[in-house]
Length: 83
Image (cartoon, rainbow, N blue to C red):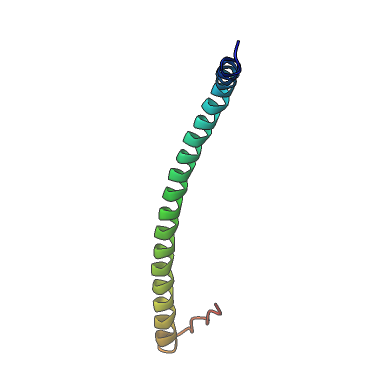
């Protein structure tokens, strides 16, 4: 065998040995893609939760302001909230 033939034979053996590694790496890439998609959904949902929290906070503050205004006009005072 010539040097070129030996090199080709070695190259073929290495390629065969690397096939399972490439397959596992492909599987890892697919799993990472799935994780990225799930993380994107979680981030979107977190943004929605933050928006909802802002609305709730605004509503609570409005109610507290109202309670402060009407607290003196009714028979029993509404206790002041320290937030």
